[in-house]
Length: 233
Image 1 (cartoon, one colour):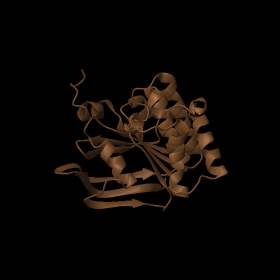
Image 2: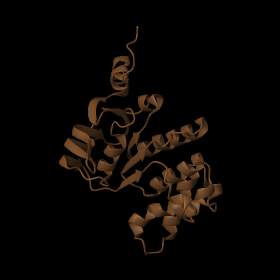
Image 3: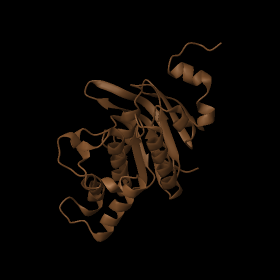
């Protein structure tokens, strides 16, 4: 399987705090890679480095193609203060293609509508984003990511705190886009979601504990070690 992104000896973090250290891993193309680990293990930082919004202070991050990268961060607080409808929020996903000051074309709006419909929020298009439930808002952010029509889609805990129906809807949509030729990387705490991925990166304290087939990586011993659980009898 070809790689889409490769990291070699990467270090990254924030002011006065290193999060990732000597991090070497790869993301295979046209499948879903799950990024798993305890809180503070570096999952969000890794996505930021791959997206290019966090600068690596050492090592190298290499993308096989120059295609677009869409990054869906954890639930944004911007919608609490900005008057923005669901359609407006999803349409922001087209700005990278059209530019901030250019009017969206008919095709752009068709992509926006299709992205909302895939996430089951078409009927909420005129609602204020800040008035939505957490699950509805999260689906709007994922729809914004889809609207970018990127080759690489990065998602930080896209199903955290959602009900089972919303989790399954997002999982189904992500499976569809990988079949369409998109590479997906998602950070998740849900080991069930992780086990259904095509590839897995297991993190602990900013370092890669293991990577590969989820069924081979997520062994009982690995889970106990990474989450520092008591030894099983």
